[in-house]
Amino acid sequence: MAKEEYNLKKVSKELKDKLKKEHGDKLRLLILPLDEYNNEEMEVLAVVPTRNVVGQFLKFLQTDPKKGQEILVKNSLLTSKEEVMENDELFYAAADLLSDLIPIRKGKFGKV
Image 1: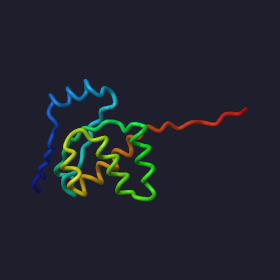
Image 2: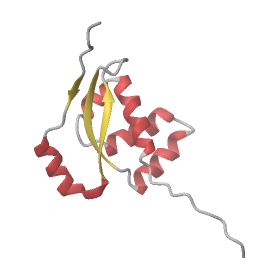
Image 3: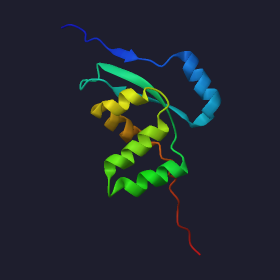
């Protein structure tokens, strides 16, 4: 049985370092599948969505989900934005991962 090939299109170390200096701990690396078997993947860099971006995303989530996802992807991705926006599979994978980055903390109730 032949071993399947795995390819990962990486973001350059220089670009990662530059964006890390610019965005600090808000920078995230997303790995998006290029095929349905995950034999080929690509790295993209994104920032954690800001409160304004999350607000716009949530505003359209119920009435126009596609527009809400586009707002999230366009305002959070820093690399390969055009490639992701042109490919439905990459777009939905990125939108799903970015929605997981929305910083929501769970609170607790206490007794009075």
